[in-house]
Image 1 (tube, rainbow, N blue to C red):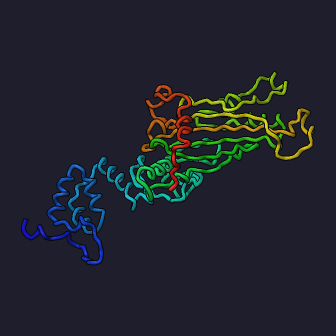
Image 2: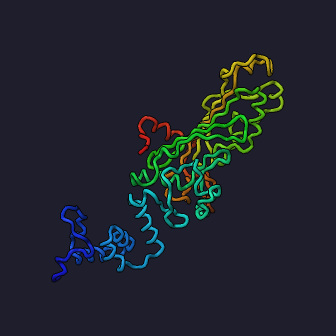
Image 3: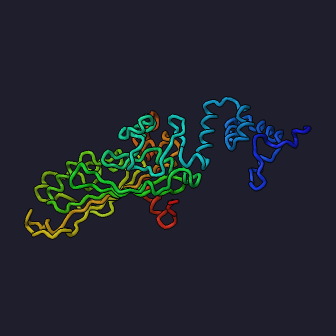
Length: 354
């Protein structure tokens, strides 16, 4: 191999006090042999050439032109790198790297039509989000992917799981529906739990029931309307209204969505009023002393979030493509499966909050 066998990589300044990579101490011929071994994965050659200026000068001029598939693999490799994954992520929709802020989350509304600063990103995320049409919480695919990047690749890649935890309200109605969101990763899949609460404090029973019935667009998932689909909240018969039966009390009534991996548990109960009000102001059944509290705890299974075209993500966001619109039962997910997974992990699962 001659003199080149003892030659080190060019364009590197030797510093006896530094500890450069051992790779840079290899003879150039050995480095070129490594490049030849990677000819079937050209994205790996470019990734190697991006590690430092010396290897960039050696490998990049010799790197072949990347096809679409190889280019995607290269961007996926860069997404795993802490130097890139800490501020950028791969978008499977446009096949580019996008920048993200470490503070972003479902309440920041970046990459949407509501944020003109991110106008150039709108096509990527239009419709690809988990939003209930009834609140400010909007979990975009980029949020889910970034959280799973942190899980799969470790810090500082992606986002911490705590960025998905939030409290939001549906302010278009009075009384307010409050939503408390928490996230968990179970078996390499992302789960959300949303606790929806409505309280009649300060209202008569009949007024509260009327407001609930007016909530035409309050959803638990993209397929379940609280007014029409949640059993204890379904409209009562006219005779029941006349008899004063405005709500049916119940605790821990568990149901499931037939289309996406959402399970929900409904509790309707009578509690003491928070504020002291003279009895009989509204009616004679002492509703001024008590209040109705409706609590719906929903469990959503979103999958590993590696692609926005995956069935679990597409079904829960309502963006199923042609041929993917089968029900959860057809795919082998029985009712209550998401809720059982969450509860089973209650004691054993460590929330990822790094």
